[in-house]
Length: 226
Image 1 (cartoon, rainbow, N blue to C red):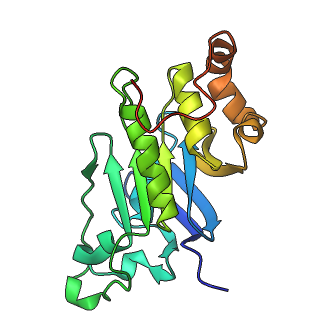
Image 2: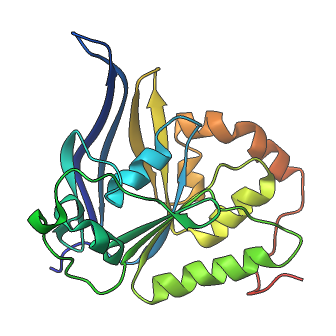
């Protein structure tokens, strides 16, 4: 069997504060395996760790424990200037995030892939008035069809955002903050399965009610919306 496009193994990112005895202020725990291309929707409350997860996957943030394998290669052992050949993180305005250097680049290994195989879109701005949604959804599909893995993180505040996620994504991840300090990933194979997760249901409940009271988008958005 070929290596999965993405394998997040025992990943933990722990933030601590205080001296001499440090106290953990936040901890993200993640376990994830995605064998092939696709589009995965990511949701979670503010502060749950969605951006931290993306930074860890792209090598922009150093894990406390565990590792991230992209196409079989540990991205945190890849030379800084070549990590973009494994995974790219586009943050809101589609600017690429920078990474933190922990070792000289010559001590790290070269990337084994010529172009990024994982693309992570962090809260892109969708404008329903100018046809931009259709353009972006087509872009996500083209990446998937080219053998890439796409993550689409949206903080939905309008019913149309749920329509976009349901039409664009084949599966979902909910980043659940358990209490004040620990977040974990909850995976769901569909929007319906996602809404069966209690934390996701609580997070999206009011929006789902508004959605049922309004007309939905077409079953499939055209490549360009008028």
